[in-house]
Amino acid sequence: MSTRPRVFLLILCAALFIVALSCKRHKAPEIAAVDPIDRRTGVPMVQPIRRDLQGIKERGTLTVLAPYNSTSYFIYKGEPLGYEYELLQTFAKERGLTLKMLVVTDRKSIYSLLNGGEGDIAAGRLVPTPEDEVNVSFTRALYRTEPALVQQEGAPETAGKGTEQAMKPGPADELPEVDIQARLITKPAQLAGQTVTLPQKSPYKRTLVELADNISGDINVVEMEGEIQDEALAQKVARGEVQFTVMQDNLAQLKEAEFKNLKVRPIVGRSHSVTWAVRKNSSELLAELNNWIDEKKNGALFDQLYKRYFVDRRKYLERMESEYLTSATGKLCQFDDLLKRYSAELNWDWRLLAAQTFQESRFKPDARSWAGATGLLQLMPATARQYGVRNALNPEENIQGAVRFLKWLNEFWSDQIPDDAERLKFILASYNTGAGHVQDAQRLAKKYGGDPNVWSDVSYWLLQKSTQQYSTDPVVKFGFCRGLEPVNYVTLILERFEHYKQFVAN
Image (cartoon, rainbow, N blue to C red; front, top):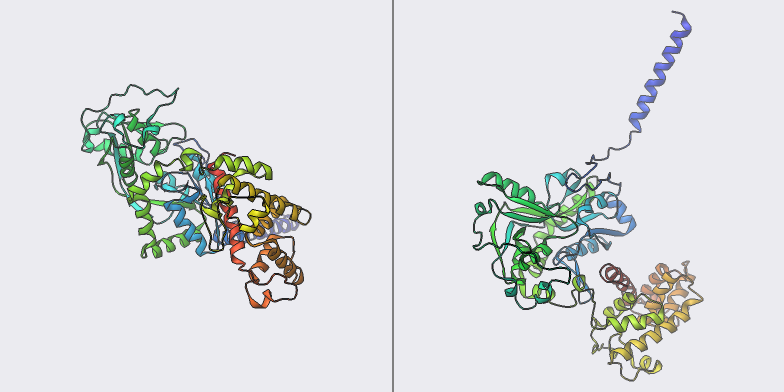
């Protein structure tokens, strides 16, 4: 062989070696493998995006994906509530994060949406299964419960007071002929040969398959297609549309209290955890959640919230029977029609005006503040007189006067703050504390290098007006201001508006 080919070969080998070393040094971090398709539902499962706790903190928002249901997350009398919602709200606040809830109506897609980055945590009475553990990571248990059989003990008409509307079939919803058991099932072995209806992708399908292996006879498991979930199936059992379903025992006990013709028995499987889920590559977030759960379980928070949402049946029934359980009825309060009518004069989404009304009075028309403000939108006497309100305790007059004041504030700020979303924050802050204090904060922002037309800058200086140093600054004309109140006022109204938009039609 000549020397030239040898030299070429040596150079080629050296080049390949260098490339190999370079690839090794710059190899991309591995992404957790996921099943490309959820075999139980056919929903495509995407690779998890790269966003962990540090990225969440930089963004300032913790986004949670959850279905709405009667214990996890719902709106009641205008207020977002729920066992998991309150836990997550506490977790987020302690880390200086804003909690954003995104309602997922199709539970089958929740893990795909989580991996795709629509949210950071999945919640909503999640039960870990081996199939799902391939695609996501689950936290420590929030609580433990068992799978319980839900069956009908009495005829639909015996369901009890407050459930009549839920029991009524619609025009195209005639009750089918279902052969209800003459005798109650009292032990799991009696399910042999019976049909049990479950939501699609229920973790209890595996439970029933394992149970069938241990008794003499098959259990016919029917999975309901569509978005129907466990609570709706409990109602179908009460109405006689299906014979049996299986659900978490603590929830089933609440349903037994709601529908008096239901019987919850027996327990058909082992105790299991109920958790949250995160992406498999969100190891920092998972560790933070687990440490927090361990810490808080030693205190009162978990126990208090569990009792409030799973043990207090009187409060549960009060919510379920109310026309202002918004996720069920679509209503926020008795003044929805008035708010819809007068918000049009502002060109506002009526749910925004509703969010402000809740913040002012919690929808109480006779509300009075220590400062003398009255009514649904807490008009001060001078403001009420200025905008033609004779009786501020009259709901319609109060809303009319408040809308006139809001229209004036919009005109006041319109030339200076052209962006609608940004101007809204100035309007709300001015409604709460007066336009003069907001202008003082603008002057401070301009003097100290901020942007007087950007709320994030102005809100900072509004907070500083509660200190002697800045409330006596030469550019300040209106003196001291409890700046935390208007800043929180704006934040809470806009957050509540986001909640309302997911539960109430415009």
